[in-house]
Image (cartoon, rainbow, N blue to C red; front, side, top):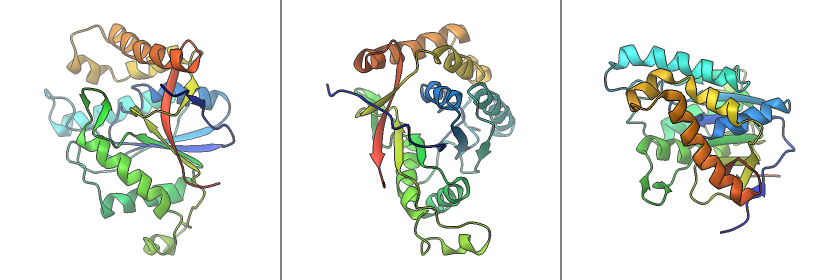
Length: 244
C-alpha cells in the first residue's frame, strides 16, 4: 500500500462541501479540529438539510433537528460558518444546477482547499457509497473549476461575487484511493465529541450507546489510517491538485 503523504499546510481558508449533516463527522471533522487549532479558517456547506435521514421523523420534523445538531457539531471543532442548501436529501442530482450553487458558494468563501465526499461507487471494498455522496463529490470537482471561469455562470458576477480561481486542492474524504493524511492523535476526542452532537441521528441509527458507537467507529478507522501514516490516529484524504 502506498505511503500516505502529509496534507499541504500552506493555506488559510477551507470550505467543506458535503451532502448531509453528519457527513463531516465520520472522520474528517477530526482533521478540521487540527486545522482550526492552528488558526486556519474552515466553513461548512451542506447540500441538503438531512431531512430524509431518520425513518421515525417526517422530513418537516427532521430537518430542523439535523440542522441544529450540525451547527452544534461544527462548533465543537471550531467552525462557526455552517450553511445549508435546499437540494432534496436522498435524491440529490448532479449536474448544472448543483454546480451553479456550489460555484456561487466557492466564489463567496474563496477557499484554497475544498474538502468533499468521495465520488466513487465504493468508499471501501464491499461498501457501497450513497448516491448523494457520489453526486456531490463529482459536482464539487467540477464547480471548483467553474468558480474560476467568469464565463461560466456569469450572472453570479452581477452582484458582489467575483471569479475565484484560487482553489488549489480538493480533498476527497473516505476515498479508497487515499494519498494524504492528517495526524489526528491530539484531536480524536474532539472529533468524537463532534460526532456525538448528532445524537438524534445516532440514536435512530443504532441501539448501541451513542458514545460507544462514536468512539468505536472513529477509533477503528483512525487507528488503521494512523498505522499507514506513522501516527496513533489519522484521517485520510485523496488529494486532487487543481492549481499552484
